[in-house]
Image (cartoon, rainbow over all chains, first blue to last red; front, side, top):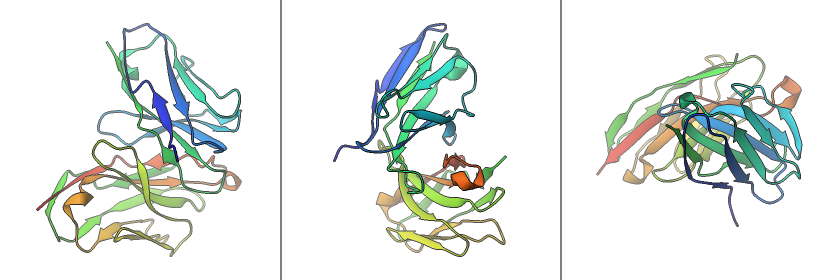
Amino acid sequence: GAGVSQSPRYKVAKRGQDVALRCDPISGHVSLFWYQQALGQGPEFLTYFQNEAQLDKSGLPSDRFFAERPEGSVSTLKIQRTQQEDSAVYLCASSLAPGTYEQYFGPGTRLTVT
Amino acid sequence: GDSVTQMEGPVTLSEEAFLTINCTYTATGYPSLFWYVQYPGEGLQLLLKATKADDKGSNKGFEATYRKETTSFHLEKGSVQVSDSAVYFCALSKDFDQGGSEKLVFGKGMKLTVNP
């Protein structure tokens, strides 16, 4: 079956522009996570949804970052007024339900802010 | 806060060599522990996991044992293959009943290259 998909795969933005990154989780997966991965580093948690409820947004680095999952399936991560330090790969992962332990990752969106 | 420390590499081995990648963690409570792998051009995928102390996770010839006394989860494989070339990440997570949200906390990753 289809895995987690993300779009766009690559995004170049000028400093100050707004961007929107999309995640399509595996159908039926309740849990959805966003991570940020800087070059040469491990992924770092940004935010977590259980269905449409955003239960943890403790990893969002600033109020320029906003995520939503309005119908409990597709999720969008929005970054306003992008800065150079926002350049990273943004990973989306989904899991079937809380307690199932396995997260399935998408290919990521590589964001470059110039 | 919770954290994971792992060998960073990069590491280059010959085919059939023995592999150990060290991983230690700092966390309150009883986290679950994971090894994720990223093959060239592919997304992160779960390699193995252990959810309680003394559990051993295994997959594709890789093994790791959850050692609470040493807060470690070292990854081992007896004989690596060229196809094992990848970046390996150690990670932990905590359940909701431990105040976590099952988010993964990753180490920095280690790039392994296996030559024929």
